[in-house]
Length: 474
Image (cartoon, rainbow, N blue to C red; front, side):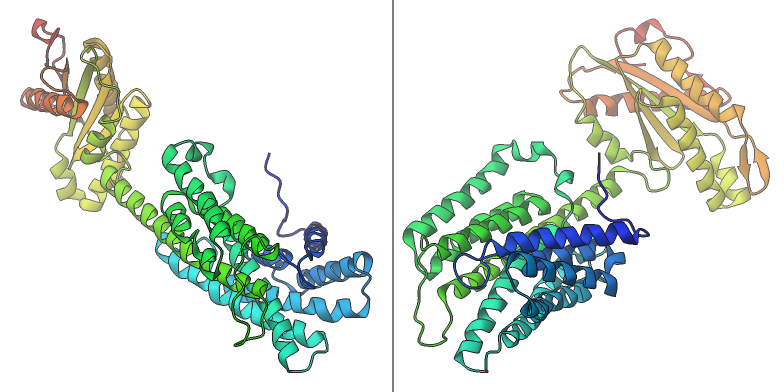
C-alpha cells in the first residue's frame, strides 16, 4: 500500500509531516558531526528541498517556517543551543529557498529531450544554495573576514555542495519502486556495481588526490547500463563512502596547504561533488536516449491513427512468439469495401474516423486471441496461432458481422460499411521463424481476399475448408 506523505489541501498533515521529517534528519545530521566541528554529512537541506520540488504546493512561507522551527527545536533540545540556533539555522533555510526557487519550475514531469538540461540545473542550484548558506553560516559564527572566515566558509560550502549534489538527484529521480528487481539479476547489471566497489578499494589502497576519481569510470558504466534512480543511489553511496574514508584517514588525499588554508576534508567534499556530476549527466543522457528510442520504436511498431500494430510492428511482435514446426498459424486479411467512396463523398477526415471505428470493432472481437495489425490503407490483418480452420473462419465472420450489424455515423449520416475477408492457415515449411511463415500466409490470404471481392464483396473466402488446406496454406 502506497503512503501519501503530503496532500495538497491538508495543511495540518503537511505541516506535521514536514516538521517531523526535518526534525528527524536534523537529529541524524547532528550525530554525524564526528570529524570536525561541522557535520560530515548534513542531509536535511537537500532532502527538504527535494520534497518541496516534488510537491510544489509546499513552496510556501508557512512550510519554510515549519522547517525552521524544527531545526531550532532540534538544536535547542539535543545540542543545548538557544539564540545561536536562530541565526545558524537560517543558513539552512537559505539553501533550501535558493535551491527550490531554481528547480521548482523546471523539474516538474521532465520530458526526454529536457532531462539533460534539467540535470544541469541541479549543479547551479546546489552551487548557489551552498554559497548563500556558507556566507550566512560563516558570518553567523562571528568570524571576521580573514583566513578563519575562509576556512569556515569552505567547510560550510563544501559540505552543503557535496551533500546536495549527491542527494538531490536521488530525490528528484523516478521512485526506486519503478525499478524492477530483475534489473539487477543480469550479470551485465552487476558488473558495474562490482567495479565501483573495486575502484573504491583500489583508491583507498593507493591514496593521493587522484584516488577520489578512481570510481568515475565505474560510475559512468553504471550510468550507461542502469536506470537513473539506481545510478543516483549508487553515486550517493559512493560519495558518502569516499568522504567517510577520507575523514577517517583510510584514503589519504592530503595535499599542499600553502595555496589555500582549507582542510583535506573540504577538498575531499569538493572532489566528490565533481565526481558525482559527470556520471549523473551521463545517466540522464542515456535515459533520454532510451526514451527517444522507445518512442521511435512505438512510432514504428504502432499505427498512429488506429493504435493497432503497424506492419513492421506485427513482424517485430512475431519474433517474440515461440516457434515450432508443429505449430500452425492462421491469417485473416480484411479490406474495407468501397472505402474510396467514403473518402470521395465525406472527405479524408471522415475516412480516418471510419478506420478508427473499424479498428476498435476488430480489436473488441479478437481481444487477446491474436494480433491485430493495420497492414496499410484500409487493409487489416489478424494473426492467430494453434487454431483450426473453423475457428479461424468463425472469428473472421464475427469480425465481418461486427462491421455490418451497427452502422457507422459519418457527419450526421448513418452509413453501412462492409468488408471482404480472406483466410489462410498453415505451418512452417522451409521457414525457421514466424515472420517468414506469416509473410507467406498473408500472400495466400490476399489471394482469397481477391476472391471475396470478385464474388460480390462482404464475405469471407474460403467459406469452407477444402482438402488441400488440411496441411497447407489456403
